[in-house]
Amino acid sequence: LFALPFVLIGRFIAEKQKVLIINYWSISILLCAGILLMFFEYFKWHRFMDLQVSTIFISIALFLFALYKTDFKFFGLFRYIGKNLLLYVYIFHIPVYTIVSMIFRKFKIENQNLTTLTVVICTVGISYFGCKVKKMLTSSTMKIN
Image (cartoon, helix red, strand yellow):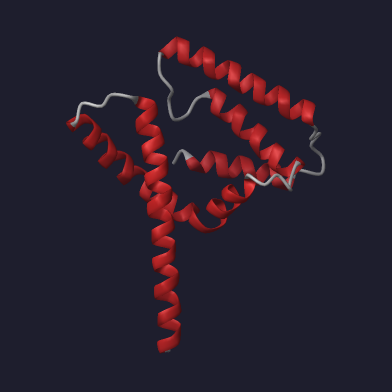
């Protein structure tokens, strides 16, 4: 359920983009506030967590940047993931996290950052594969009918 608030924030920003003041300064202020909060939260709790106040600030800054700078090439990857893989990422994230955590515990790997990175890479990879399989099955089913 962590994704739901961010999807709603993104949709709200997209709906209100005409009345929002979107420029490099407003985006930079939000991003810097999020990064400062992230450091504060890390020093307070000594680890990065899935959802923190800093995550909200950084996400809003990224949403605004995506609206402000639509031709930014790196966003092509995020657009592809959002358009084609979002459902699969949502479905596969928790099982992948559970499996990766069990494997890391078994091998006594206790690095939260490595765990997070591994989960993201595996989830996107499995989601990409799932999307391709669904498209293949859908196209072969349509040929049969």
